[in-house]
Length: 164
Image (cartoon, rainbow, N blue to C red; front, side, top):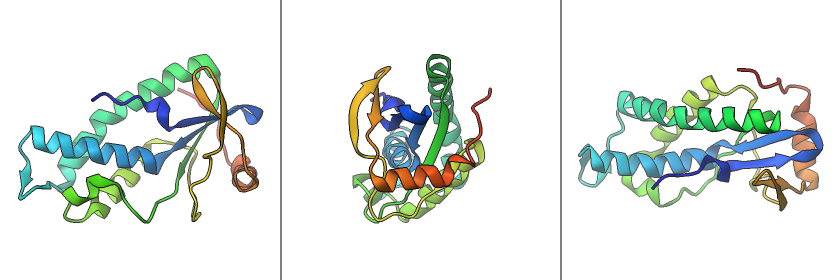
């Protein structure tokens, strides 16, 4: 299954900001990692390997795809990225294949945080940036709630322009 990274993006037209939900992306990476481990037979008792070198190699390979999507979108939209991380309490189905799912989450978070600037950790009970109305360049557009506006205005001054 080939995942389209655009499903993690939301465009905030008013400020020309491309918002990316890092935790949702990590959950999808975790599901892909389970498949990867089964393909390479690095599963024991239906539990995937939690060895950091294997996880990092997997992340490195998949990050290339995300980077190329970001570059293509940059050429089209001339946006400023906003990568946010808001960990959920309940994980998806993939978690049952890990002895400790937090190992994959922490490794992925550290990996992505070191490579993505404009990375912000948000501690909200409800996942922000979920109200969508319409699309722009085939990317869902954010219809911000009051909470969304607060998060964005608090962090707007820290955003760096996107450069390659």
